[in-house]
View 1 (tube, rainbow, N blue to C red):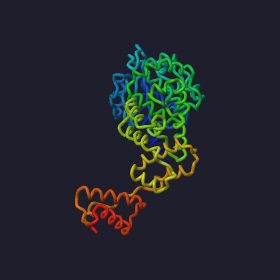
View 2: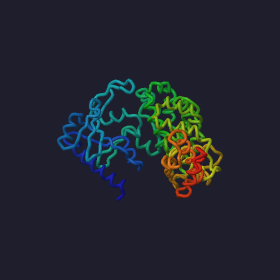
View 3: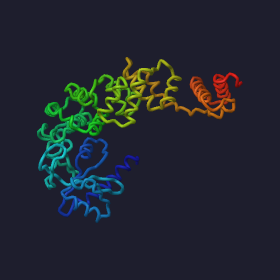
View 4: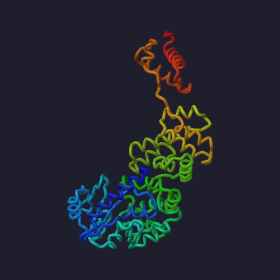
Length: 416
């Protein structure tokens, strides 16, 4: 049994315990949303959400009596997190809209599964399933899933006005679950009409959706659709380099790397350092994400397999393997060479074959040569490090002694 299989069995066992507590004595509980969708598609399930007819207080009472842990993470909105055998499950009481005014719609608890399904965003996200495997579909989600279509439930314009983030979710789910075709025409038209609502969203929420979209298996045609609709410029606030993004996806695959959202964002939107700053402000990127984009902007032009293996190793030593790979892949994506190019492949995969050593020389090595503490010592260490890199990172005593002597003499000709 693989570890993934063991983990899946563990979650399934915990879920069975939870449903045994909630799906009885006049109340019903089902798995809902993404877990059902992904199970039907044979895709990985990252989290399992449960919906129930029981009100939150009853959920807490039942799970506590059964010896399970209840955490009132969103109890006012009907959500209780239940921890079973270390696995957390969000359990939410069925709801129906009373008043709709954006993200903060007023809802009431209910017992109507269809009403609960109809208030969700997309048909493929509104499926529910009992533990015996019966799937319930009130909005046409199974038909849409069969043709990999992302479609709003009911009137798209209304769904979007309830939460303008659904514009980005529409494209993000299309990138993840479609087969690369055109987005649903009615949904796309509603997204264009509602585009001004994007300005109301927090940058943190926009960032979350954009980063997930970028790594979707069909991100390329999805971004093209967004650009054609005038929405990508609205989201990123600048020029998008769609060919560079498409090439990045190809070269990532060529070297066997999983899609990386930051690296792909760099390919899509960063040509110079100012682009990285703009995206940081537009999306409120994390500091480490901003640093990677700035580094990519500054380095992608200066990397090439023509410079040889030693130059690649020197960059890995200076930058670290992640930044080196960012630079190399972006340089490759913006070169004239295809994803099948052997030279770019060999250079980009250097970190997989070689690990940069630690600089073996210390200040004490130069103090012994008579170099005094201060600027001269620092200069000697820098000169020695540069010589060590140029020599191919030697580790034998004779080579290191030669490097020490040359660096010491260059800083103080009277030492030797």
